[in-house]
Amino acid sequence: MKTTVFGFALLASLFLSIHLSAQTMPADADPALWARALKVHKKAIIVDGHNDITGPMVDMDFNLAEDSTNRRQPSGEALHTDIARLKKGGMTGEFMSIYVSGSTLRSGGAMRRAMDLIDATNREAERHEDLITCTTAAEIRRAKKQDKICLLMGIEGGYAIENSLYALRNFYRLGVRYMTLTHNVSHDWADAHGDQPKNNGLSEFGKEVVAEMNRLGMLVDISHVSEKVMSDALDITKAPLIASHSGARGVNDHTRNVPDAILKRLPQNGGVIMVVFYPSFLDERTRREATERSAKLRDQIAALRERFKDDQPGFVQAETELMAANPVYVTDYKRIVDHIDHIKTVAGIDHAGLGSDFDGVDVLPTPMKGVEDLPLVTYEMLRRGYTEQEVRKVLGENFLRALAQAERVAGNRQVSGQGSLKKLAPPKTN
Ligand SMILES: [Zn+2]
Figure 1 (cartoon, rainbow, N blue to C red):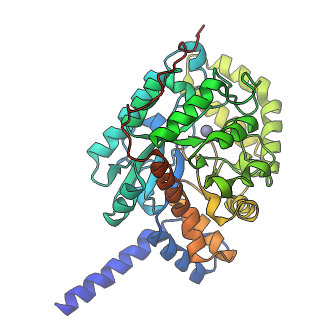
Figure 2: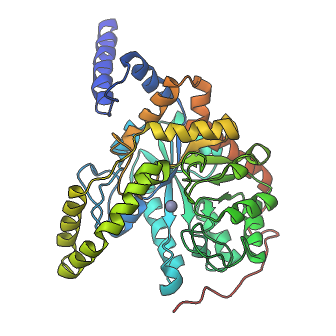
Figure 3: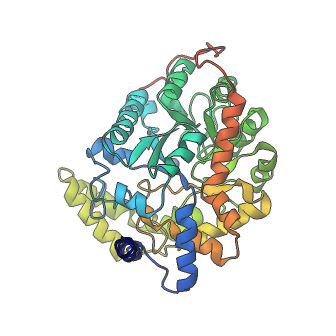
């Protein structure tokens, strides 16, 4: 028997080493530190604040059990997520984005889109043994013990509730545990980053939304909102805030990132900035070169769009070739840890997390290919001297603390309970 067990263990460890070697090891990695990083990573609870694979799940009927490595979105971007890759990345809790485009403010259909994405998320959890839906911090911890991957849900674009707190409560009942108050456009009750303000931050109704989210135990997400909305939300919230996928403006001064003035208020609030992986948000040079390229190629892309107007795959291929012929500098995974470092310096280690935006971006920091490459971040934190405990906080423990605190603020209440009955007319479309 002993031989069999030993033989099995040997075989298992051989398999494990092959399995792990499929990940991208940094070219200049110290092998001993890389091995330690993989060990620390495997043991930790890992929560990612933002993943957009939900779009392909609805629009391409993408099944998470399929191999996504050679699949592309209709717009040409490579897919980053499937079950095998989530496992390789050590994922415990992945926030599936219920992303609703700001264009629905003109076309209508915001709530319908959210419903489709929520169904697709639940469907994946229902049909795959490896997946489970989670709605509490305790459920995420239990899933780790059961070796399952939690799918969690966060709405991106507060107009998905179509100005109704009744709808907000139903989204909570369906399992949604955070809501990003805006996307890239200001709407009836909250202003977006980089757009004209409509409400000087949060309107009175917007404040009511935040209060109701606190009462329910749904986290308020300040990614994408204007700085004034960030500070209004901090003024009134009773529970920790998150930024589900943003960086620090102290490293790259982009409106999608969080300024130091807000970071400084996090110790008081208990919130977590989950650092985005999008190179243009992480790095000034990438952002500048990407912006310059867009300006330079604008007319050529418009011409291609006209030429291939009845041939979307043809357009995507021509556009991809044009981009490849005009490359820009793409920052690497170490830049992610520059943002974590900055948050650690200004707010403290208890306030940093991960919010990749996998499948929501056209490029990842080199040499990342997808969710399987999360151990690179662990490696870089260890390389910079972070303790194992600090690494675990960033990977997931900080988020779990914030969610558990939001659950305590909500307390033992009924969802319908004392909820506000205020509502505005649905957003006007045209
Ligand atoms: Zn986003």
